[in-house]
Amino acid sequence: MTGVPFIEGRGASRPDHPAVPGTAVPALFAGAGDRGAWRYIEFLTAEIRNPNTRAAYAHALRRFSDWCQCHQLRLEKLTPVHVATYVEHLGRVLAKPSVKQHLAAIRMLGDYLVLGQVIPSNPASSVRGPKYVVKTGKTPVLTREEARELLDGIGGARVADLRDRALIGLMVYSFARVSAVLGMDVGDYYQQGKRWWVRLHEKGGKEHAVPCHHKADEYLDAYLTGAGLSAEKNGPLFRRLNRDGTLGTTRLDRREALAMIKRRAGAAALGTGIGCHSFRATGITAYLHNGGTLETAMAIAAHESPRTTKLYDRTRDGLTLEEIERIRL
Image 1 (cartoon, rainbow, N blue to C red):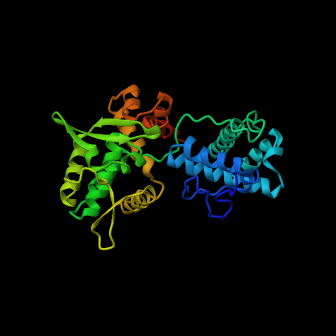
Image 2 (spheres, rainbow, N blue to C red; image 1 turned 90 degrees about the vertical axis):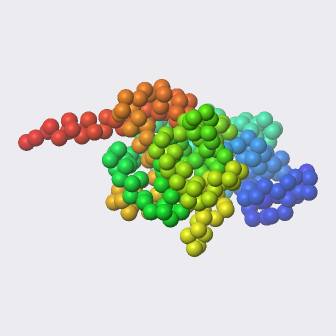
Image 3 (cartoon, rainbow, N blue to C red; image 1 turned 60 degrees about the horizontal axis):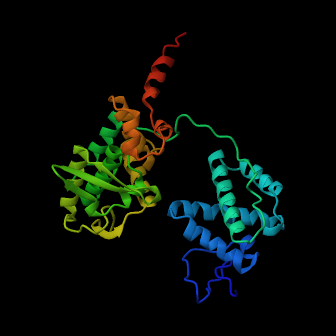
């Protein structure tokens, strides 16, 4: 094997392998030769299918490579002590969940390199990450009144207003992740019998169909009619705006959606802490507050475990505040 591609800024690729856009082999793995470089690329492209996870793992592995380069460590010479030292270093600059994610990336790639006979053993397999137990999520949640105020405040007939209200409303009323909503095509909002449904493309390539709440119906219908998208079944549902304020043809991405949400939240005097995930948590909390069950909320949200759903439940926040206010001097 000759001609390792994408090594620290080199763009040439082997003729018998397709180029992988944006994939650069960090020096630690490129230094293990062609086999090490290709196992790195195969790991990120063939083993890690979720684009967001792939980007996060690539960042983690590049950071680990940079640390190893600073300490003049080669891949084949790494030991559990080196990895543990790196994890302790990360613990001083990153939050515990981020440290655990970085270690997971190193450990998974290590297993992949062992299977590919690049290294004899995985130096990260015995290294333990920091303990991290969470019972309540940190995502800011809107009260029902705040959520209504935000949605009602996005009025007007401009296509930008119709799009933004439909996007936020759909996340609230379907408990959907922003990536699942942004991945929808127009045809993923469809009629089945007398009800309208939304088809969400969730993590792991799973398709998740949810009956559409009547308010989400209202917002989506107004958006599709105002934007003239009803007939474009195979086109993106939520799209970027052109410079003149008209709707474009390309799909809105997460960064742009977050910027829009920050702008809308600021205009409603809700602060800048609100993010895309806030609406998922807001919807789940409102559902449970109104008598919904945790098991059904888990099914709607497409969670694998009720413990995950429970992280989004803030129904006790108001109760806790009321009890605290009983402390009077």
